[in-house]
Image 1 (cartoon, rainbow, N blue to C red):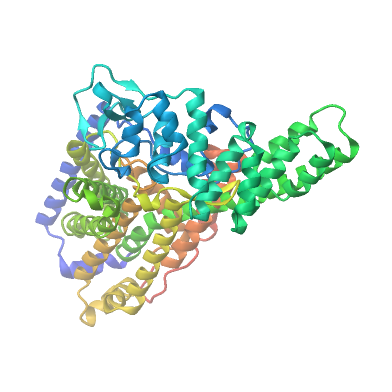
Image 2: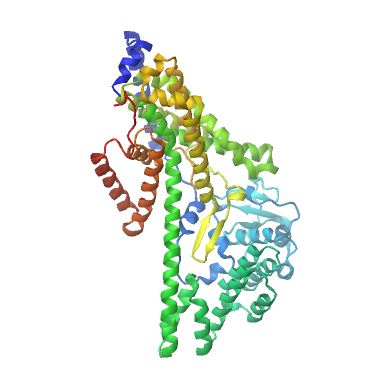
Length: 601
């Protein structure tokens, strides 16, 4: 970027007062940075319980462990795949006073059993009851009142869903005996089997499959006789084959294996391996078992790798969101913006604030807060970015090292301000209802809705950015200034204004990345530090200022990183990936795509 000094000499002459201002500003920033770093050391951020991240990681991989009886009595495959975070605020449960859950808590043993045999509420309320009991969050207080206790020992009234500091003296957890556990499971199954939604009926079959030892075969045959949907019929036939396989008759087992061989369920594979481990197996049955084992393992392997590729694509979309804004600011201005990660963090906190506003003033529309949070996160980060460009970066154009130091100081200031305002601990951003759950492709492949949404969101943002840069007047000016700044100024383009707006655009894109990341992970003062290095890697590998280069680089780094983690672990995968990036840069310093222009270095 050797052309910057000559260009800015005409706009802002380097006089003694400017030098004094810059030196004083840098000294102040470094002093504040040292102070904030010391304070951060004294009050480290405490990461809250993040059930959602753990579930998102595991839902795309095949599980070959044996079915754990005690856990599966109170959950189905879909609940295992859901990305709902463990309750930290009861906003996820849309219920009214006197609902079925509240009646269930206040009832005695006999009434509870009756309610589970004939559930008076909706199937969603029964699913919510199962989830609350599974997570040990449902409690009963004085006089039978219902409370929700989260993992952080915060007590909420129910169904008002308000935080309370007045704990009842006889607060007791709602636990179920084995009899009520069975009634809960099969009550949930009954409600789902009677649903008009085929998806609900498939979920009912999944619950029955998890509790096959207690299953009445007549229930399956009756359901199969009345079923019209092909997907539900297939699920019922596989469950019937599993029942026949457990019967012990060799003829039935061989016939059942012809059906089970087309399954990709880890549970079926466990049954087959258990049968193979038995002594004195019939030769014909053993041959059928071996064939079924190979077929099931192959299907599970395919599903597993599809899941890994989906994870890699999801990671790549997150990297791209984090890097798009950096690609613009770094490519246009030549600024090494170390505060880019903190702009991502600001977008996440803006999302958190919008959520709180909706919960306080629009509780009936809380499920749609994310729609409002998207433009808010963009605008807040964009405005802060333009302020940073105008006050901090503009006097330092053409001096990359100084911009690095200055923006690093800005990043520390922003982190410390967030700690002062929101505290050092992570804050909770709840998943909206329509992004909770997952799409079950098969028994061993489940794709979380929030990850699918992030991929779609990234594609939309990318298309809008490409349109803005290639089809609008502003995009024409940005490209002109990027390729030949002096010629753009000569034809009347205000390069200083374009610099500010472009930096604001890049900062706004960082805010959008923070808004998306708030749906899949913790939101805390250190959020940006997690992604800043990877974002720079994407920009450097893709080519400075090249949007499509950033797309290819994020895909390569995201997918390859996920694949490497499978074989050598997360730490070694990171090391190998960094070595590969270094070797690539040595061979091709300009990245995948070189910036074109007469005056580009």
